[in-house]
Image (cartoon, rainbow, N blue to C red; front, top):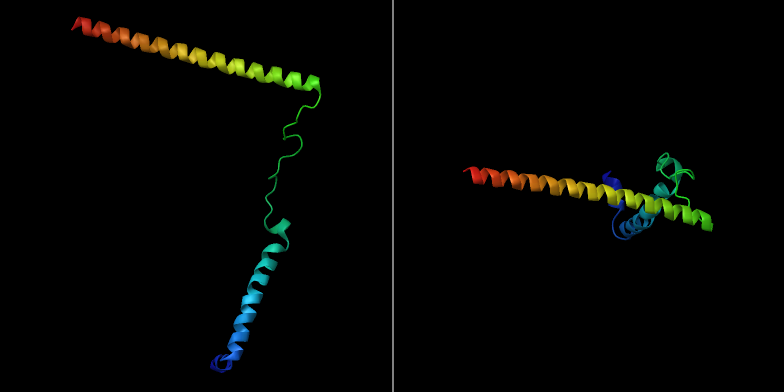
Length: 105
């Protein structure tokens, strides 16, 4: 090993370093750039055509989609309003109980 190190002095060392500077990135790119499908593939990563959204193109399809979206929005709005009414009723009941407890004391 010491004989190899003695040979890497002066110009030979510079040639060795230059070779490493050039070959290391090339080797790195070759290792990570070849056989990508097998090395870094994740099965079922991309959605299939059935799982993807289908953009409506015809006027009838667009109208149906808008009607569906409006229906979903109205159902969500009704749920929010019902929850808000329940929350308001619960708060009013708590306030009434608090008032009765204060009046009793």
